[in-house]
Length: 162
Image 1: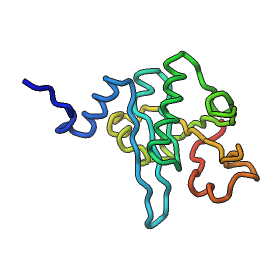
Image 2 (image 1 turned 90 degrees about the vertical axis):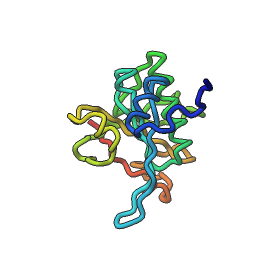
Image 3 (image 1 turned 90 degrees about the horizontal axis):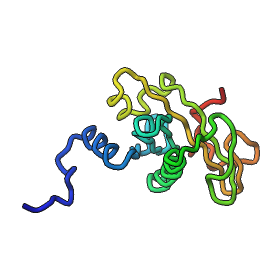
């Protein structure tokens, strides 16, 4: 008997996500950009932060899946180490060069349909999610006047300051 190098080959998508969370603690779910009728950037969200770390899931908007997964991995590493990242406030120390970033709470009802796998895994809608807001190359954030205009559409802010 040989071990299948792709044991998830014939799994249903949700079963695959459950398996990844069980094996690795969390999974990243990429969502491609939408062109029509209203353009929307790509985004990637975590699945399993709530289950594994008792922390809200996190969405990263406007980055390629590999970069977004890297950021989610940084957040997961902090959670695993017992660090509680502040919500709705700027913080440093996570990104290179002590660049500022933040985690903003997202209203799941206002963003209905944005996280389909979480919706299906939590049929009661009982999950929390935060937006990881990343800076532009000069360190500015989307609500700051100096933020790179070209990125405003790439990283819409769906989270909110409480």
